[in-house]
Image (cartoon, rainbow, N blue to C red):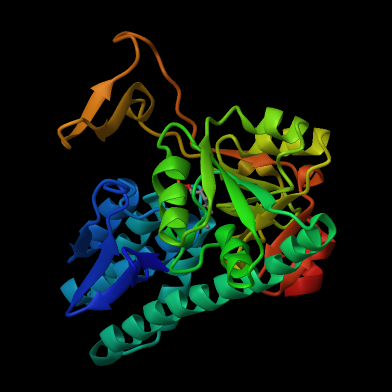
Length: 356
Ligand code: MRU
């Protein structure tokens, strides 16, 4: 998708370095950063220079390539793999991508290791692009149906950033929106600000603006009253890990939006590539929920009137904080899962029909 009118992917390999768009600097600065070592890749994931489940999977895949560039010793690759997996615990794509890379290179001799790994990392990213494009084409059908009934602007609410910046391209939740825009369907997106890191305001609104899609940022608690007033036709969110039961783990606050949607008969869809499905865990309480630094709550970064980027304290100095990054929306609140293979019920049967 476009930034300043130019097409980009969120990650690519060029001249022995991995290039990323530093998402901690958006929307005020657009900076392309080089990752030169596996440590750089781990750091980029931890500090959220790259974020979003599919993109951290892609970054971890390239992290293995960078590890091999540094040192082909199997112990080093194994240790790097473990550190990559631990860099963010909730999104399953990370573990999925690292395991896929290790399976691919396990029987390869040291001379071919780098080329095989690079090809696989590129394949993981290309596959994500095509999966997200298909998610868009499948989700488009739902938006078309709403438009054909309503014959007026379709209002979609989304949470966090499950846009192209969270994937390699297209996004998951935003892909149906981009496809509907191409079809000429009039759209408007309600963008949840998504405290504490404001991925909705800083990233989703930014990327929708760059693609000329009308959108309005709202405080996280506003969705409920908008639904009561009939101002939301559907919700589409992404996910960091969807269990085979259909329970959906996503950015903190998703659950409350799903409850409000249920109470107001607003369809609540979750868009995901199959790399985000956890086929092993059955009980959502076993999902590791990332707890992040309290600074993300107590401090906020922005641009002052002179154009300087500043970080300021917004809480009483001695107040305690708690910063859980994700929550789980039980399957019963999810209208459907939009995947690369089609739309299915949020249930074991629904998912198995599509994927096994
Ligand atoms: O903490 P983040 O910014 O990585 O969280 C991202 C989300 O929760 C997204 O909704 C999810 O990863 C889906 S991305 C297509």
